[in-house]
Every structure is written in C-alpha cells, then in structure tokens.
Amino acid sequence: MEKIKPEDYSAIVIFTGAGMSAESGIPTYRGKGGIWQEYDWQQYACQLAFDLDPKKVLAFHELRRKSVLDCQPHAGHEFISSLERSHAQVTIVTQNIDGMHQRAGSHNVIELHGSLWRLRCPSHGKREDIGGTFESYRCEYCQAWLRPDITWFEDPIDQEVFFQAEQAIGQAELFVSIGTSGNVWPAAGLAELAGQSGCFCVEVNPELSGMSGLYDQVFQEPASKLSELFI
Ligand SMILES: [Zn+2]
Image (cartoon, rainbow, N blue to C red; front, side):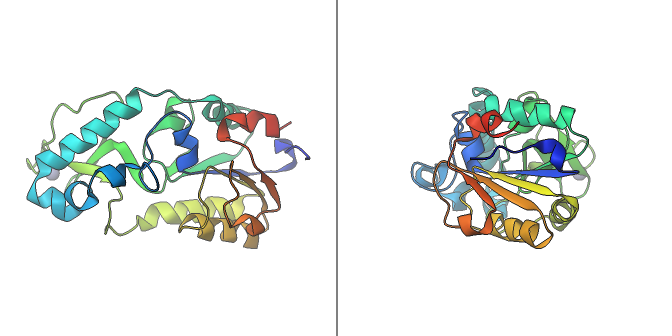
C-alpha cells in the first residue's frame, strides 16, 4: 500500500472521531460499552436536564473531565501534532470533545462538538480551563450557571464552527479521516464534501466503515499506527 507524502499536498485536513480517543483509553459515548449505555443522556446531556438540575449535570461532566485527565495522548496524536509543525497548512477537524489533540501540542483544531474544557454563559460567552476543576460554575458577571460548551443531544450544531470546517476542507488537497464510524453525520457529509472539492481522501480505521467507497485510499489500521502510513 502506497504511503502518503504530506509535501505533495498544499493543505491538509485531518478529521478525527471516537476511534482516535478510544485508543488512549477514553470511554466512548455511543455504541457498545459507551457512556450512553450506562447513563441516560436525558438526565445528563441536554439543556432540559441542565435547566432542571445544573449541579447534577456539571458533576457528571466533571467525572468525564477526570477520566480524560487519567489518559494520555497516543502516538497518533503526537504524529498529527508533528505534522502540524513540519507542514505549512494542517487543520484538524475533530468530533471529539476531550482536547487530546491540544494536549499533544496541536493548535489548529476545529472542535465540531465543542470541548469539555470550556464552559459558557448564555449571555457572556465562553471561558476555557484546560487544567482541571473549574473554580466556579457561576458566571462572574451575571451569576448564571455556566454550562459545558459542548453539543448536547437536541442542541443545534454550531453553524460558525461547521462553516470553518467546511472552509478548511474546501481549501484542502488531502483529507485524512481517522477513527470515525463514517456512516453517521457529520462524518459522511464532510468526507463527501472533501471528495467533491477534489481532495485526495484517505480513511484510517481498523474496521471498514461502510463509507469506504467515498475514499481514494483505505488503511485498515488503528490511529496509533498513523506515522507508519506517511513518508
Ligand atoms: Zn453571564
């Protein structure tokens, strides 16, 4: 199988999904053994639950943050970060909310579903804390409860963030999808967009996603083996 030469492409989009984080030991949300089998999202991951009992919802997210801090970025995260340093234009588009790319040293990260490391006030915007526990869950200006800045069930998508992702894909010549189940939105849509805008499209996933027809090249490999697929 021919390896990928990053310098053949002026701009690169790396698109990551749950499989990327799972290899670091971070529990996945959907699917078998996922968090939503153990917890009812209607009690922990929607605006209505937050409005009814913000403390309970925030405590649940604090648990998620702690379980992420117990895990470390793997060789795949490190490789993407090194690619960003050695290549002029690399954009990471991720469906993950755990901030693992940033912990591995990546900077240009578009988080489609937000981040566990941000909270937001409905009136006064977002605040970030990559370190650990938040000092306060109340907005310092209006005392409102701050909610996690992630896309919950029944939340609308963040149009601005999706627009940024679409722009990056529109300008890219290489699109590498890693650890996404592929056939669920938005993964399928973004891969399709990449194909339409002329990207060379590569899939890296241990299992065939069922969307492999969208890709020019498929590596049935885990994300941690990423560096072996590039020259
Ligand atoms: Zn406020």
